[in-house]
Length: 100
Image (cartoon, rainbow, N blue to C red; front, side, top):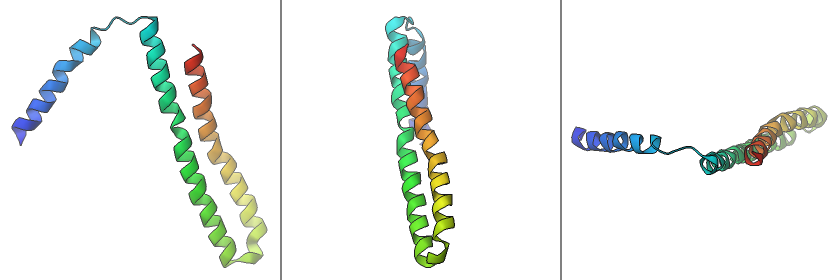
């Protein structure tokens, strides 16, 4: 087991000097910017999943206590707005990274 792990780690470590030998130029920087923008856009997936879970819990709460619908609605709208800011931040970062 340790031999396999050692082989994997040694192969990865032998690859690092070859990566560091790359001469950074304009295309290299733009490519890394596009990769970073792609990663930043993934924040939208977490935002969507979180908002869906919060909305389902709010619907369950209204189903259990219909008389508290007003308070639940206000709380849900505020939390949805706060959760949406994460996706917007990711989109802004993606725009910044691709504009350079």
